[in-house]
Image (tube, rainbow over all chains, first blue to last red):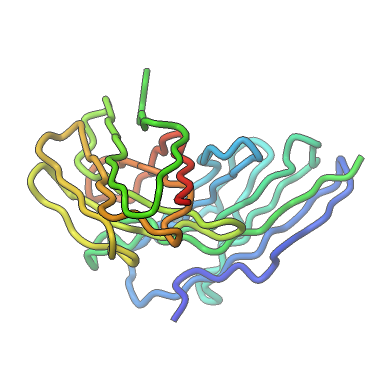
Length: 116
Length: 113
Protein backbone atom coordinates (compact mmCIF):
# COMPACT_ATOMS: atom_id res chain seq x y z
CA UNK A 1 0.00 0.00 0.00
CA UNK A 2 1.16 3.52 -0.74
CA UNK A 3 2.47 5.28 2.33
CA UNK A 4 2.09 8.72 0.78
CA UNK A 5 -0.52 9.59 -1.83
CA UNK A 6 -0.55 12.76 -3.85
CA UNK A 7 -3.57 12.62 -6.13
CA UNK A 8 -2.91 15.77 -8.18
CA UNK A 9 -0.28 15.16 -10.87
CA UNK A 10 -0.50 18.80 -11.94
CA UNK A 11 -2.04 22.02 -10.67
CA UNK A 12 -2.38 25.52 -12.10
CA UNK A 13 -2.79 28.66 -10.04
CA UNK A 14 -3.00 32.33 -10.90
CA UNK A 15 -0.25 34.53 -9.54
CA UNK A 16 -1.12 36.01 -6.12
CA UNK A 17 -3.81 33.38 -5.49
CA UNK A 18 -3.60 30.67 -2.84
CA UNK A 19 -3.29 27.00 -3.76
CA UNK A 20 -3.64 23.75 -1.82
CA UNK A 21 -1.63 20.66 -2.69
CA UNK A 22 -3.11 17.45 -1.33
CA UNK A 23 -1.31 14.74 0.58
CA UNK A 24 -2.70 11.74 2.42
CA UNK A 25 -0.62 9.24 4.33
CA UNK A 26 -0.88 5.78 5.76
CA UNK A 27 0.64 4.78 9.08
CA UNK A 28 -0.28 2.90 12.21
CA UNK A 29 2.40 4.67 14.26
CA UNK A 30 1.51 7.34 16.79
CA UNK A 31 4.76 9.21 16.26
CA UNK A 32 5.70 10.31 12.78
CA UNK A 33 6.74 13.37 10.84
CA UNK A 34 5.40 14.85 7.64
CA UNK A 35 7.47 16.96 5.29
CA UNK A 36 7.04 18.94 2.14
CA UNK A 37 9.85 19.48 -0.34
CA UNK A 38 10.02 21.68 -3.43
CA UNK A 39 11.95 20.64 -6.52
CA UNK A 40 12.39 23.44 -9.07
CA UNK A 41 13.42 22.73 -12.64
CA UNK A 42 17.06 22.99 -11.58
CA UNK A 43 16.56 19.70 -9.74
CA UNK A 44 17.58 20.33 -6.14
CA UNK A 45 15.34 19.26 -3.26
CA UNK A 46 14.38 22.18 -1.02
CA UNK A 47 12.84 21.56 2.39
CA UNK A 48 9.73 23.69 2.95
CA UNK A 49 7.87 22.68 6.06
CA UNK A 50 7.56 19.99 8.72
CA UNK A 51 4.65 18.76 10.87
CA UNK A 52 5.08 16.39 13.78
CA UNK A 53 2.26 14.03 14.62
CA UNK A 54 2.05 15.39 18.16
CA UNK A 55 2.11 19.03 17.13
CA UNK A 56 -1.21 20.60 18.04
CA UNK A 57 -0.76 23.64 15.86
CA UNK A 58 -0.55 23.53 12.09
CA UNK A 59 2.96 24.30 10.91
CA UNK A 60 3.62 27.57 9.11
CA UNK A 61 6.73 28.90 7.37
CA UNK A 62 6.24 32.24 5.67
CA UNK A 63 3.81 31.72 2.78
CA UNK A 64 3.67 27.98 3.40
CA UNK A 65 1.30 26.36 5.85
CA UNK A 66 0.39 22.78 6.45
CA UNK A 67 -3.25 21.87 6.94
CA UNK A 68 -2.83 18.85 9.22
CA UNK A 69 -5.93 16.73 9.79
CA UNK A 70 -4.76 13.78 11.82
CA UNK A 71 -8.03 11.85 11.91
CA UNK A 72 -8.26 12.03 8.12
CA UNK A 73 -4.52 11.34 7.75
CA UNK A 74 -4.04 14.31 5.50
CA UNK A 75 -1.27 16.91 5.41
CA UNK A 76 -2.09 19.38 2.69
CA UNK A 77 0.32 22.15 1.77
CA UNK A 78 -1.16 25.61 1.36
CA UNK A 79 0.83 28.22 -0.53
CA UNK A 80 -0.55 31.72 -0.13
CA UNK A 81 0.00 34.59 -2.57
CA UNK A 82 1.55 32.39 -5.26
CA UNK A 83 4.56 33.70 -7.12
CA UNK A 84 5.99 32.71 -10.49
CA UNK A 85 8.98 31.25 -8.67
CA UNK A 86 6.69 28.77 -6.94
CA UNK A 87 6.35 26.83 -10.20
CA UNK A 88 7.97 23.48 -9.36
CA UNK A 89 7.35 19.88 -8.34
CA UNK A 90 6.18 19.49 -4.76
CA UNK A 91 6.69 16.29 -2.80
CA UNK A 92 5.04 15.19 0.39
CA UNK A 93 7.07 12.79 2.53
CA UNK A 94 6.76 10.92 5.82
CA UNK A 95 9.12 9.52 8.37
CA UNK A 96 8.21 6.92 11.02
CA UNK A 97 11.26 6.87 13.26
CA UNK A 98 10.06 4.52 15.95
CA UNK A 99 9.02 1.70 13.67
CA UNK A 100 12.46 1.51 12.12
CA UNK A 101 11.42 3.45 9.07
CA UNK A 102 13.94 6.21 9.47
CA UNK A 103 14.27 7.17 5.80
CA UNK A 104 11.81 9.56 4.24
CA UNK A 105 9.15 7.95 2.08
CA UNK A 106 7.99 10.20 -0.75
CA UNK A 107 4.81 10.61 -2.71
CA UNK A 108 4.88 10.89 -6.51
CA UNK A 109 4.65 14.64 -6.43
CA UNK A 110 2.47 17.42 -7.79
CA UNK A 111 3.67 19.77 -10.50
CA UNK A 112 2.53 23.31 -9.74
CA UNK A 113 2.43 25.89 -12.49
CA UNK A 114 1.88 29.52 -11.54
CA UNK A 115 0.33 31.63 -14.30
CA UNK A 116 0.92 35.37 -14.62
CA UNK B 1 28.59 25.29 5.01
CA UNK B 2 28.96 22.60 2.34
CA UNK B 3 26.12 20.37 3.61
CA UNK B 4 25.78 17.27 1.41
CA UNK B 5 28.11 17.09 -1.57
CA UNK B 6 27.65 14.67 -4.45
CA UNK B 7 30.01 13.99 -7.29
CA UNK B 8 29.84 13.80 -10.22
CA UNK B 9 26.91 15.99 -11.31
CA UNK B 10 26.54 14.26 -14.66
CA UNK B 11 27.78 10.96 -16.06
CA UNK B 12 27.20 8.83 -19.12
CA UNK B 13 27.98 5.13 -18.75
CA UNK B 14 28.00 2.35 -21.27
CA UNK B 15 26.03 -0.81 -20.54
CA UNK B 16 28.09 -3.12 -18.37
CA UNK B 17 30.40 -0.43 -16.99
CA UNK B 18 30.71 0.26 -13.28
CA UNK B 19 31.03 3.47 -11.35
CA UNK B 20 30.86 4.92 -7.86
CA UNK B 21 28.75 7.92 -6.96
CA UNK B 22 30.38 9.83 -4.14
CA UNK B 23 28.51 11.45 -1.28
CA UNK B 24 29.95 13.28 1.69
CA UNK B 25 28.37 15.39 4.41
CA UNK B 26 29.96 17.73 6.93
CA UNK B 27 27.08 17.99 9.41
CA UNK B 28 28.06 14.95 11.50
CA UNK B 29 24.75 13.30 10.66
CA UNK B 30 24.36 9.64 11.54
CA UNK B 31 21.73 8.90 8.93
CA UNK B 32 22.49 8.89 5.22
CA UNK B 33 20.39 7.82 2.26
CA UNK B 34 20.53 7.19 -1.45
CA UNK B 35 17.44 7.82 -3.55
CA UNK B 36 16.81 7.60 -7.25
CA UNK B 37 14.31 9.71 -9.13
CA UNK B 38 13.05 8.53 -12.50
CA UNK B 39 11.59 11.11 -14.89
CA UNK B 40 8.30 12.56 -13.62
CA UNK B 41 8.34 10.37 -10.52
CA UNK B 42 8.98 10.69 -6.81
CA UNK B 43 12.08 9.52 -5.02
CA UNK B 44 12.65 5.85 -4.31
CA UNK B 45 15.01 4.68 -1.59
CA UNK B 46 17.93 2.54 -2.75
CA UNK B 47 20.00 2.09 0.44
CA UNK B 48 20.38 3.85 3.72
CA UNK B 49 22.71 3.87 6.68
CA UNK B 50 22.06 4.66 10.34
CA UNK B 51 25.73 4.99 11.21
CA UNK B 52 29.25 4.02 10.23
CA UNK B 53 29.47 0.32 9.47
CA UNK B 54 25.68 -0.14 9.21
CA UNK B 55 23.76 -0.21 5.95
CA UNK B 56 20.36 -1.49 4.93
CA UNK B 57 18.39 -1.99 1.75
CA UNK B 58 15.63 0.31 0.67
CA UNK B 59 12.87 -0.20 -1.86
CA UNK B 60 15.04 -0.62 -5.01
CA UNK B 61 18.49 -2.00 -4.03
CA UNK B 62 19.12 -4.39 -6.93
CA UNK B 63 22.16 -3.49 -9.01
CA UNK B 64 23.68 -1.27 -6.32
CA UNK B 65 26.02 -1.57 -3.38
CA UNK B 66 26.97 0.80 -0.61
CA UNK B 67 29.47 1.07 2.18
CA UNK B 68 29.76 3.36 5.19
CA UNK B 69 33.25 3.29 6.60
CA UNK B 70 33.06 6.82 8.04
CA UNK B 71 30.29 9.08 9.31
CA UNK B 72 30.97 11.56 6.51
CA UNK B 73 31.01 9.33 3.42
CA UNK B 74 28.38 7.10 1.85
CA UNK B 75 29.38 6.04 -1.68
CA UNK B 76 26.98 4.22 -4.00
CA UNK B 77 28.44 1.64 -6.35
CA UNK B 78 26.80 0.61 -9.60
CA UNK B 79 28.02 -2.71 -10.94
CA UNK B 80 27.27 -3.72 -14.54
CA UNK B 81 25.26 -0.64 -15.44
CA UNK B 82 21.95 -1.19 -17.23
CA UNK B 83 19.66 1.27 -19.10
CA UNK B 84 17.10 0.83 -16.29
CA UNK B 85 19.56 2.63 -14.00
CA UNK B 86 19.28 5.81 -16.01
CA UNK B 87 18.00 8.21 -13.38
CA UNK B 88 18.84 11.13 -11.14
CA UNK B 89 20.47 10.01 -7.91
CA UNK B 90 20.18 11.96 -4.68
CA UNK B 91 22.17 11.50 -1.54
CA UNK B 92 20.69 12.85 1.69
CA UNK B 93 21.49 12.96 5.38
CA UNK B 94 19.62 13.63 8.59
CA UNK B 95 20.39 13.84 12.28
CA UNK B 96 19.34 11.33 14.87
CA UNK B 97 16.27 9.24 15.38
CA UNK B 98 13.80 12.05 15.94
CA UNK B 99 11.88 13.50 13.08
CA UNK B 100 14.13 16.06 11.49
CA UNK B 101 14.44 17.19 7.92
CA UNK B 102 16.76 15.47 5.50
CA UNK B 103 19.32 17.57 3.68
CA UNK B 104 19.84 16.67 0.05
CA UNK B 105 22.78 16.86 -2.28
CA UNK B 106 22.43 18.48 -5.70
CA UNK B 107 21.88 15.17 -7.45
CA UNK B 108 23.77 13.13 -10.06
CA UNK B 109 22.20 12.73 -13.47
CA UNK B 110 23.25 9.32 -14.80
CA UNK B 111 22.56 8.05 -18.31
CA UNK B 112 23.33 4.46 -19.28
CA UNK B 113 23.58 3.89 -23.03
